[in-house]
Image (cartoon, rainbow, N blue to C red; front, side, top):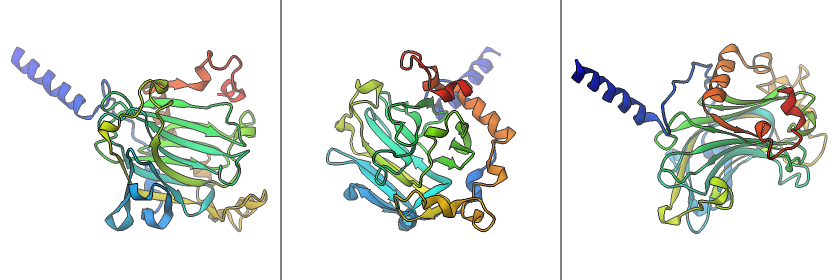
Length: 314
């Protein structure tokens, strides 16, 4: 009997360690698979080179791409169109090994068009000094509100270097939702408290990998160690659907994306089913925040003597 119990214990520990990037693994709750609702397009159809062209390697006829950081350069992609609201997703596999100081960013921004009052919605995956302990940080800016960082950080419930996992931004007039493998990890509701800093202008989609030694890992304590380069991130299964438009700084640019009956089809996530999270999605969100979130700006009393207005409204 003792041998049998020992065998069961070894098997149980093995199952945990095979999929966990840190500590015990928790099985995520079942949620709607939003990424199955929208078409996937090749990287080459939706994005073009932003920088570091020699460190971007296309695969599978352009459906996938490796973006690489080495001692010479990082690299990045930018969407060919800008979007006002929409659904934006990619499957990403992160670099293995010692990745301190490395940042993989999948985000939306219009800083190139609105340098003084830009909007931004960020996924930032932060490398770590330990082999698999990547951190996922989310952030949001609106109308140039960069002095107030709205970061939240979670540990992932899987090893992000072994397989592709989906990172998704849903952005409409009701809320911004960050999802990982279709599980909401953060929701920013478009309330009166947050309205002045809620992203309100068309943005491009970006995917970049770069050296953020000065802040990414333990506040810059662990810089990039290029002995472990190149750092290769792979991405594919790209989904970009929304109200698409040309880049412009005109304040009337979003007029064609209003929700009147003639053009509402231009924004596929403005409908009722995307206005609030479902019960399943709320259960997933609460699961992530209870078990995996370890930092929220709304809890950082040493950073903010007076909390941002939306923190009291949550």
